Length: 487
Ligand code: AMP
Ligand code: ZN
Image (cartoon, rainbow, N blue to C red; front, side, top):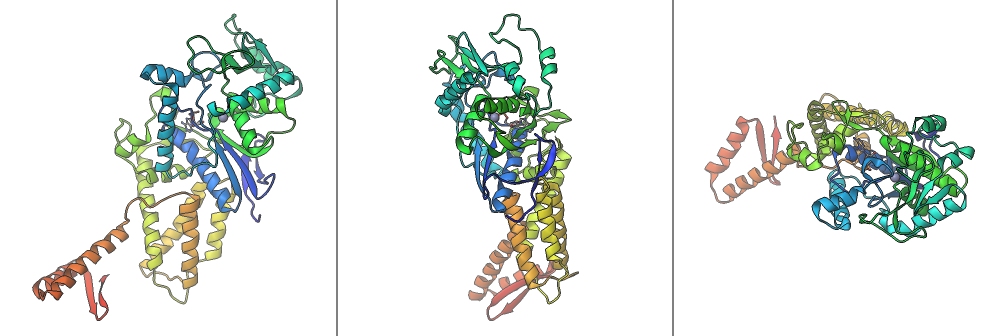
């Protein structure tokens, strides 16, 4: 494939040329949501960033298998190895079956993804749907000597693993520091060492989500599902693994360890991590109380919101920053994004109606190159948007008669802008644009005038013409019908 797509690989801490294992096929795995509550805008940012990555790979012609899981068991409160399951806590609070909680928030998640125009993945596997495979993986890790069983639970032996592998290779943590910094266990868990992590946990009497296993009744550890489902659908060595930066440690570090304990070689060639959406510099999170839901965002019903913002305004706001940078929420930035989005869509409505001439003031090839250069540079959407806005400006200037565009350039521009704005950046038209609306309104008025004429009500037809003229709209009558023009 002819391109020079480079991606920042968190594992090597370098920008690298993207070379798939089995081109044109690309395997992409992204950690999905834990479905115990409504997703907030921070979650949306991460999934939107990967939506762009998926869309661009598809645009380049790759056949992408995009796997994004649903975590519906095993993620414990506080992201640690002891305690209650986030979903079970919610089920108890709301007096629901755990699977009712899962269904409710999975549905909600899908609605939000559609609202923001994020494409569905090719496969959306659930942790509870892969319990057998998870048990098999635990057995394999035990067999290979990288885990131990105590009292019905199985733990990954990080110390043993570190003898031959580098636990910390992704997150940059050092095993010696992890060992010396970890608190003593005070007999509270069965772990040999605090750095070890659970592969399988024995379920207490109260635990709602439970399955039979060779070690008794229990449930899988949080990190296990992603190792199992990514390799099941993408192979032991696949192209891209993504997630939010906060998942790098321990979640992704543990995933690598689990995979390497089962099969030799690097499980993932490119690790991509998205940065956080913040509010006044602090990560948006449910626990911080600063996370508003997409519904609140649209209605404006939250103390942090000065008004409601449409989903495409929010998408524009997000894409104005690179996925690897933090993005701080602000009403000012969203209001600016609202204007930007409208101006861009308006230009797309004007473009097909532009008059063409022999001479073109547009440098089409340079424009196309700049679009691809931006996206090939680690999916740089802010640069791409600024390039698109050069074209937007050009369109308005042609409309104003200041410069001209040739037929070929106009057609090329239309194809390319549609591809980048709608297919790659995933925008959609939200409401009728100003141009569409005025066209529609004028058609209604001209029809009314035509009817008046047919009924020989010339007073009305003349009044319509004269009053439009007062606001600089001139009607031209001909045998084919009436047209209008702003003078
Ligand atoms: P969770 O449901 O908590 O596992 O989160 C789902 C995804 O959203 C993960 O990839 C997280 O890294 C990501 N995420 C959580 N909070 C934020 C935030 N404030 N900004 C961006 N991504 C986030
Ligand atoms: Zn995961």
